[in-house]
Each structure stands twice: as C-alpha cells, then as structure tokens.
Length: 323
Image (cartoon, rainbow, N blue to C red; front, side, top):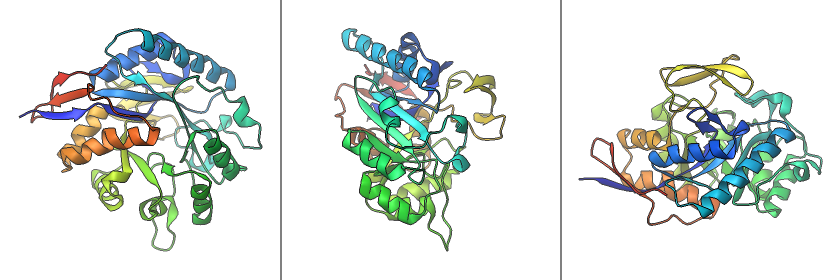
C-alpha cells in the first residue's frame, strides 16, 4: 500500500546539483527547484551564508527573477518561498562552516543595507549574544522577518531575552550551539525545555547521531520540530572534491568536510530525511508534521492539496504531483 505524503517544505537549503545559492542565477535556482520537486519538495527557502552585500544583491535579484518566472510558468518545480539569511550576525566561536570574515555586528543601519527579496518570507539565523543582537531581533520581528537562534553560545538569560524580543525558533538544533550539561543548560537544553520555541534539525545521520535525533524530537514533541536538509551544492553529485564558499570541501560516503575540518552542510534531500525518520521508527503522521506542516506553519503558508507524493513500502517514489 502506497504511503501518501504532502509536499515537503525545506526552510534551509544552500543548493544542489552543482548550484550554490550564494552565486546562483535565476536559471540555476529554477534548476534546483526542478530537482527538489523530483524529490518531493513543494517549497523551499534559498539559504545564504555570510557574504558581501554586493554578492547578496546579485542573488536576491536572481531570487526575485526566479519567483516572477515561476508565477507565470506552469512547471513542475518547488516554489521559491523567500530567502533565509544564515549567520550574518553570528558568534565567531560557533561559526561552523560559515566565513566569519563576513560576520556583522548590529548597530542599527545594517538591516537597511541588507538586500531583501520583493516576494515571500524572510528568515534570519543569528546569535542573540552578538552586539546589538536583541535589538536586531526586535527590529526583524517588527519588519515581519522570522528570527531564528543559531550559531550561538548564548546564556539562558540572553536566550530568554531573545524569546521575549520575538525569536521563537532555533536553527539546526544541536549543531553550532552549546550543548546540554548537567550544570549548564546550554542552548540545546534551553531549546528542549522552553515551551515557547520550536527548532529544526538535520536528519542525515551525519550531523547528529540518529539516537540523538530521535531523543530531541520525542523530548520536544514532533509538533515543535521541523526537518531541514541543509543541502549544499554537491547534493545529487555523489562523492568527490568540490569548491564551496571559497574553499575546497570533500564529500566521502555522504559526509561533507571543509579545509578547516568542519562539516560543511549536508548532501541529502528532504526525501532522504523523511526516509531516515521513517526507518528510525517515526510514524507517517509524525513525519508529515515535521517535513511539511510545521515548516509551513513557521513560514505562515498553506500547504497545497495538489502537492503530494506517494512512496512504496520500500520508500521509493511511485507518484509525484509536485508543482
């Protein structure tokens, strides 16, 4: 009997099939959208890593053009839903694969200088402890952005202030943040115990041990968890050596690593994450919430009844009506 699922919503995706969002043209973004649709994704947020404002302007123009073309063409593509800026205002000590030379501090004008798309949702991952971080969250919230806590070592007092200011989500839970300790709650511990926040998580089995993914999702409750891919440009291209964000990365057995020794995103799709979660014992209902309904709710959008995929009992696609 086929497993029927609504199309997935990927709120954190840096690219695929050789296309890096940070340098993408409109054609490149549409190629990624077509690939993602083939993998069950109904909508996605192109996700930018820290870069120059000039580079940002170029890709934001590409995003706007791609969205306009999608609105006038009947194609089988994942819808581009806006933009996700990851780590413009982040903690250098928790940079992960991001480039700290492009990190900013917030003093009031930086948000006005940041290029933004004409259409869709606007999300930003930030560390609330950076200079001006709480005021930045207030300003983002006032402007209708979705502030998300990430790449951070904030203490609990700062996290509570961030929540009060409007940051109610956490980016790639467990990764690039302080963990749980029995004498210090840490960002991860706070995220699990604070009822007012949700989080997303990378279920590739590389960033986090599967048992820890299951623990986090069940401890928090699946209603408060979204799956993300954190996909990078080499996704869909197999193992090998690639250039990404100004440095060489290797992909070996599906694990990425940059020249600094950090994991540099994933090479999974949302379909891969869904398959893993089902194999790790989560129900179809739970996975539907985490891969589709929860991220759609975070972005304030409705899922389309027409966007569905069907999987066999072996989790192979037998039907795809995305787009």
